[in-house]
Image 1: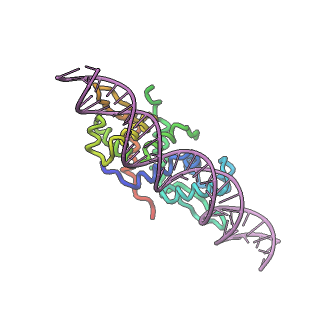
Image 2: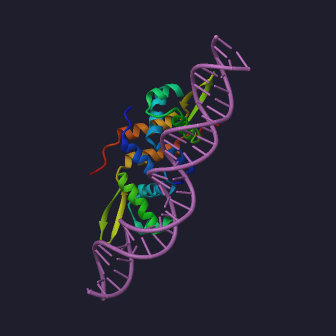
Image 3: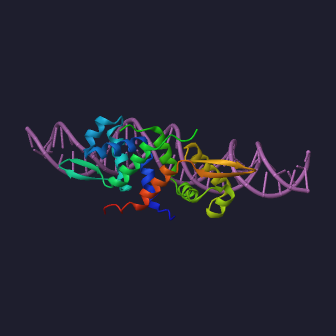
Length: 94
Length: 94
DNA sequence: CCTTGATATAAGCATATTCGAATATATTTC
DNA sequence: GAAATATATTCGAATATGCTTATATCAAGG
């Protein structure tokens, strides 16, 4: 199987607790940065940094709504599918 | 959705070109370390280190066969499913 | 036991990530 | 246009990753 470089970028983007949490929240529905600050134990700057990484990986995108940016998962089948797989994954053999 | 810490460990383990390549190869069938060296452009020590990371993440395990260790993916539904999702993922919106 | 083949671990260095603090930019409102 | 709100960027220090080289372990054969 050919390993696409983009896959690693996506996986790396998701491989962080805060970022995984962000995309899980965004799968529930579009959110602006301020509302994410209420949900996550991270500073505004930090959330913005993580969003930048997710944006670079093409995992999320946003629509501008006045001064606000409404973020959403731009490949929900992929990201949602990944989270579902993880959620349903049986515990590893001891 | 609850974010399990283990998920991040699995994603981090897979978020590396060599390691992703290793699991892709192992999904095709069990392999010992020596035969992986023929497939990958990496040193023995390096491959062994990556295998250690995959082991810690409970992504792979091995059976000992004499001096050889035969590695295999120990959660093939999960890992195979992830790779399939990535492979089938449409290109992100430009 | 000594050697050889297979694999793992340790040490060291270069590079990358992460996060906080401060600052910048853009938009709305008054 | 000044102040307030929303978000992004920059910088620096701490920490983590990745890779190389060298060394250790461990099993099998002689």
